[in-house]
Length: 384
Image (cartoon, rainbow, N blue to C red):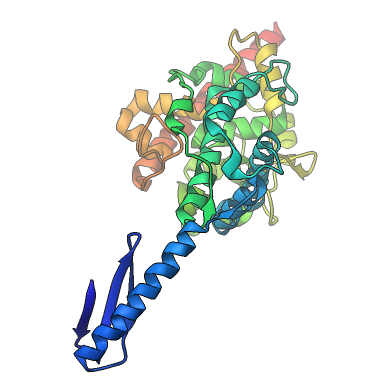
């Protein structure tokens, strides 16, 4: 650190490092003796000013901590497929933490080591809306802890706020068991599709021939379909896109065709009535309006069919993974579903469009054949 010259300027330059940060200035003179005097004065003032600024950190309340993080994150919401949903989810988690930590509490007064233990106890006894069972999963606890950690880290990075002592975040992480075989069998999946209500049948079938996540499938709009390139483009987190090739099965579905050989005209008409295939807007409808979930009818249909284990809506994605893995191997699963790691659905990597198209063609043919078989069996029983 000291004075130096560059080729771009005839004047002496000065530089000094304060608290790990480098500061530079032009000293405005070509004389070395004068430059040294000016540098000493400037360096002293800079050290005093920056050290004083560092010592006089501003105290902030809990709502301010999350407000700072929200401003930082808000710019990323526009890159999500549903920016409003992302913002609402952020505010929901933010408000939960503000209520728990106290809206009038100063961050530097918090004892997070003690508070986080209390939070975990409270979370495991939390009343969840529309559920009889109390408490949230370990996975949800980790996500909410990660939210608080990210907000704290962002404020800490700013180096201008007075914060409490940072806890060892990893000590508060809950163990999440790795579950295997989440998806129902292909046979049960086909049986479920054959016995679903028309609006739910559209969703069940489309997920089963594409491997899409529930959010992507439910939010599919006609504007996202490129018939010239035969591709549907979905927007994912982190400003990434996922391209779904339009296979013959997908094309047939999106053009209102029958989805299996033994589909009755009555069911076909009722099912297509719950689709928007020509106008701008959502493709999947219920009573003529867009909707967000088939959770209730998905569960009820499984109970009516006598399934011993009830699967959630996401299970169809795991079922597709099972089919592709059985037909073509694990590496094809990763490429077809857009995974960089088969064990997670959160991290995305470049996916192989050609492999995806080949595998989805196989799945489309297989699902249609199996549903047709189940439907024919149901008709044979009813005729006896």
